Length: 209
Image (cartoon, rainbow, N blue to C red; front, top):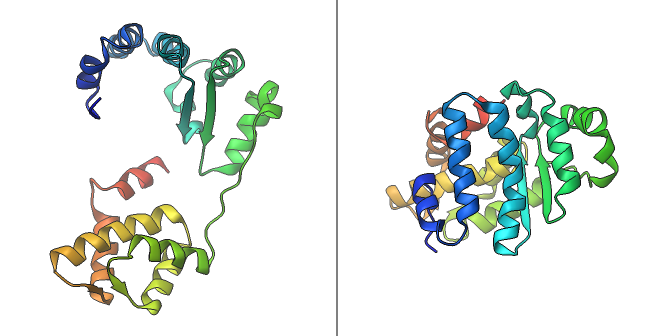
C-alpha cells in the first residue's frame, strides 16, 4: 500500500483491509471534535488490540515524550494506560522521554504494578568518536574537515538527534551551493536554519520542552 501521511487518505486506503480499526479511528476523531477526550482516550488505547485481531499481526506502540499525557487533563491517565499494557498481550509498548527523573517517577508511582515488566534503557549522548562516526555516515558523499566535525560534536552535546538534523541541513545546503566540501560559513547557516526555522523539527522539539 502507498504511504499516506494524511489521516483521511490513510483511512480511505485501509478501509477494505481493516474496517473495524478505521471505524474506531473515525470515532476517535468525532469524539475529539466534540470535546469528549476521556472517551476518545479509552478507544485510542483499544486500537492496538483491534488492529491485531483484524490483521493477525503484533503491534509495537511507541509513546514519545509519554509524560506529556498528563497535559490532556484525563483522570487516571496512566492507570488506564497501565491496564491496557497488562491486558494487551499482542502489543509491545515503548515509552520514551527526555526527562528521566519524571519518567522514573511515573513508572515507580503511577505504573508501579508494571514497573518490573519494563526494561529501562538509558540512552546517553555519543562521545566524540561515536559522534564523528555518525557524521561520517550521514555525510559520506560530501567532504568536511575534522575541526568542523569536532565543533558539531561539541555544539550538539553528542546528541544523535541534533547531529542528524544538522547533517541533513548541511547536505541540503551543499547541494544548493553546489559545494562538494563543507566549510564554516555553511555550518553557520545550517545551525541558523535548524534553530530558527519556525516550521522545522527543532522548533517542535523546543516547544515540547
